[in-house]
Amino acid sequence: MSTNDSRVYDVAIVGGGIGGAALAAVLARHGVRVIMLEGGGHPRFAIGESTVPETILFLRALALRYDVPELSNLASHGPLRRHVSSACGVKRNLGFAHHTEGVPFNPAECTMNPTFGAPLGPDVHFFRQDVDAYAYQVALSYGADGLNRTYVTDVEFDADGVTVSTADRGEFRARFLVDAGGMKSILGQRLNLRVEEPSYRTATRTIFNHFVGVEPFDRLVPSREHKMPSPFAQGTLHHLFKGGWAWVIPFDNHKTSTNLLCSVGISLDLNQYPKGDESAEQEFWRQVRRFPTFAEQMRNATAVHPYTESTRNQFQSTKIVGERWCLLPHASDFIDPLFSSGLSVTFMALNALGHRLIRAVRTDDFAVESFEYLETWIKKSFGFYDDLVSCSYSSFDSFELWNAWFRVWAITSAYGINGLMGSIFAFDKHRSATVFDALERAPYRGVQGIDYPPCAEMFRAASVAMQEYRDKEIGVDEACERIYAAIRDSRLSPPVWKMLDPESRCPAPSLTLVPMSQVLFWGKYLSPGHVRGQYFTSGYSAVAKMSLGYFRGQLEQSGSTVYQATRDLFFIRNRDWRTVGGDIRPGELTS
Image 1: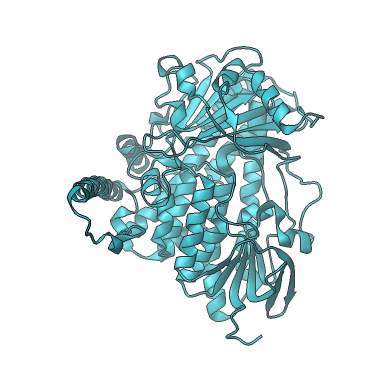
Image 2: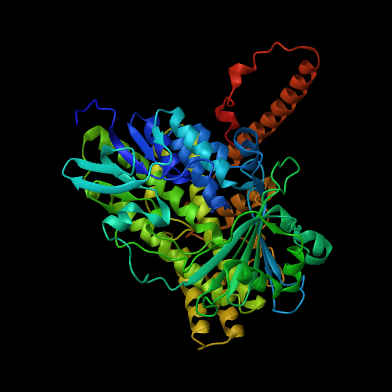
């Protein structure tokens, strides 16, 4: 094919979901000729619906680093609702309610971790059919090509690139291939990359669906009883029980929501709950009925799709990068829906992959060595989540054990978040994308603070205690004692977090303006030497500026709505066509 052939591209991306489309937008924005080949179409049903603060900060970094501001609309609920879809939910917390079979829920046996408040948040529940379609459209608006319902049947590599064959659209040629196809990865099949028996300790399976009629948990267990600072229904609720957990992700939990659906799924430890002869629907409801308060929450629920189930959630690939190809994380490996790890690793990887691909296209140098960073840190990130999730399943045995263990996750999450915030604040000050290079240097690489030695050592000590508990070498009391000791000895936790107080079941304060300022003060003046200078070092001016931008955006939005409503009562002529799609200005990135 000639170089000006319409079927020749710099990069071909197999898959047009949120990861593949966001990458396509980044590449096209910087002059890379890219095509997305999506086997399905938009809109489409998908899971991966819940964000965590680290996810939205990686999204913000991606938008700023590559000058694709539209992606920042996915990073908090306000812009998402205004510019993308009013069918998405708000996420103000991660709530965890521990259950014992046959016994009503005890309001004292729950924990909570807050997400961002304004101006950085709140976090979101992605209604993926709308969010994925938006990301796909953003990529097209920057000049990427896209084909829906185009099933890739084969790929053939040579020294200069790859030939991609499709079922009914012929062949395409590209200099590099990115597989964003998820579990059904074409490279996983064609290059025999899948590990037949994953080495991950986590071994779970899942049954899930979308429902109407799911009761808000706070109607059954009022806040005066559970004493958590925000309603469970305003976040992602995790029902925990021995050997498993269930998620409840409402899309109808904001007063402006136009979506009646709620995502509910149940994940089960394969060793304790091997698959039997029941249908997915039968087993789903049998599990729900084991726990009276969960069953009451679901008593009026009606499924809207056929039930989906997995035989095993975990899959693994031997390699992530190779000659002229790369797998995105959701095509390479998966652990479990717990802690929404898939989206975090995906957006971490996109930040690292984008500039490498742009440089490779411009220099015509696609050497594998240039992409080995992704191989290393995607694998390390999934390894961390495997340890985190497998220990979490063990901690579900008792509330006391979970109450201790979840603090380890909360601390590693906080350090992962703060490393990202440092780069975002630096960008606000210097307006240079080079500040994000810090995310690929120690101690900020990967996810969840795994590159920071004190954080890694605290996690190691606590996870060893959990492993010994799982192996029945120690009991619950000793495991809890050793977990709290690991937290105390690390000196990573500001006093305001109350991580050493088991009675404080929401130990981390809300990520709103005043608590964030308290933590920044601790980091700058009171933290131990191994923290000071690397974390919690700056951000006062940036947060203040973001707060002003947030209020301005809210006022402008309210004023515009009132003006348009008043105008439309009397006049038909207008100039609204000038702002179709929403004008995105730098000050709106955090509004």
